Image (cartoon, rainbow, N blue to C red; front, side):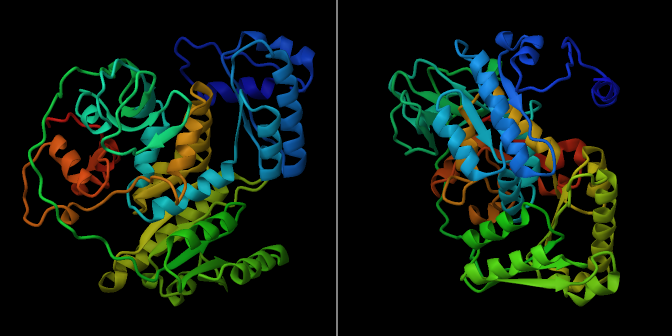
Length: 456
């Protein structure tokens, strides 16, 4: 309890009007749950703990059983972090209504892969997942037989991206002519739920837009993972879903143990579409990095080994040194640098500015992102199904696409409503804009604006 009291003022110097109350004790014991007045709660979040994942899952499931027993007559959702897929399935089958389970490693792995394929995506997700800036909301109104596409232009603030039907089904990017029924809810990206206002008429009308049938061509890719953690296997499997057959994933490590060697060999044998190779060199040695021909990779992901008992700053420090070495190499060999994208995972959010100053445009702050996802699900459990769709290769994903795919001659003057219309020609929903000239300016959100005014 004293440790919590010491940590909270450091990380939460201003809690505004919120009182933070701490208690100690086993959370699977009813008496301890009564001590925090669990019967009065709006939601419960159960966090995993400990290096042994099986033991951690067992403790989380015990806590879910106790909390669910205390909340038998309440409507409060329970959000729980569980490692093992089988354990998550057991919980889902036992508590179908009010318990939502999340796999943090799986979510982060998918985020890292998606981010590596679209520069700036980490900034978009950081804003959507936070409670600052634009977020995802479910909103109900009198739709008056409006189609989904027409509804997009009837919100002064926000861009609808989907529908939740009366039966609870989530339709991300439904058919354009889908007619909203009386009990449907819109899934909308907006600044705040208080600013969402459905109008009887369009707030802006787009001008007719040209259709340009130019698409980015996908080819064989080379990916480099530096380091290894519990997300690495998922990342490699995710890459296999995205890349063309014949692509390569290299794993760079100094001295991997036998378990890692066996896992990499297993992945290489089981995934037919790509080659998975282990390279034993030192990512903190400039000559070793240069010998890899780093310019030949499409993406380089630096993983944070955040195992039990690790020093987060020490892990981040090693990654920052690797980033600086890579940046030095790319600057020195600018003629070869090409379009290699650097993505890194950071454990301590206070190191974000340091990493960004090292020339990395995409930074995944693991603990912060997971905290934001869990917090959002605890506020709106239905949002979990949306994230499952967005983080899936088979679902509707978020991309940053160059305007040259839509227009031939530049400069071009158009409104955001016009951009929405031209995106429809390619079956996309436009939710924002990125100004390339500002992509290194943290104070201006790296040039990204979600849901700008439709007349802008």
